[in-house]
Image 1 (tube, rainbow, N blue to C red):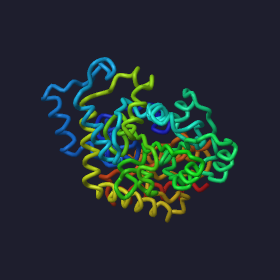
Image 2 (cartoon, one colour; image 1 turned 30 degrees about the vertical axis):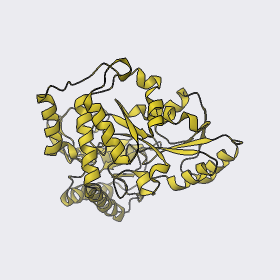
Image 3 (cartoon, rainbow, N blue to C red; image 1 turned 135 degrees about the vertical axis):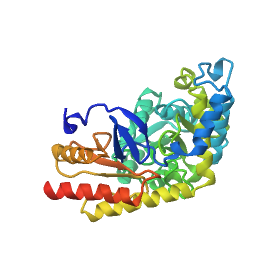
Length: 374
């Protein structure tokens, strides 16, 4: 099977996860995935995992909190999350897909209607569908349409819901305006910071940090993307976190890996204590973005470490991905949320990428586009 034919197949990743990958026993320069800060190879992270194993910390814990036990590693990661976001409390979740379930349950006394950006992540849309609240949507990043929807609520309190950074495009929605519109109607804003945490904002706390919203907005985030850990957290007041813990999705889930919890706690501590890690990553992403824009590609300006563009039809995009694959450069031709019918080429910038890496991928894209104009 040719490289082009196999691109939609499943490839075996032997090792790596930052700027380099071994794909089907071949070394690739990697621009795919979500290991944004590239913390996984740092000795501090590896030592935490190694020490946990040596100390007998189990790989998994099947006893949930409501049935008699809770491991110290889970308390540790929840304390780290609360410190990272400056909240009273946090709850650790085994999967990022539970962010919506936890957040909507924790905030339930404070809203009547869920109002979602139409491009909000599937985990938010699914959690909204399963909730006991009414659900409305508004056009993506359209504050006028959001205001229209809110005006139709007739006194009901909204919880406006959005991603902080959209997974495919790297776009930041106007969260400051979302918040102002929600607050003017005695409502609140809930943000899924999964692709923003560790990357965006002066302190690396995500889009709410970027917009200066602080504790005025409510947050859930995965720990497996910018922070290079595993699981997720919902943060808030003691009361909000207690309500989140009581949700059936959380009560019915095993708590996750204690070892992953310790690694994730270490990652949050590192970013909180060294915000320069996030600033350096944003600078690197900005550098590659400007180089690709100079080639004539239409790429949105964003502080995220995601760079995406669409050009031509599906086959044109697939041809570019195939050429990059053959050149030993691993990128995504994404058909995920907001990608459109032709898909988008999506590049992730990692903390260990170099200027030479950026030149290499830009040269490869330039050569292919020169030979294959739209």
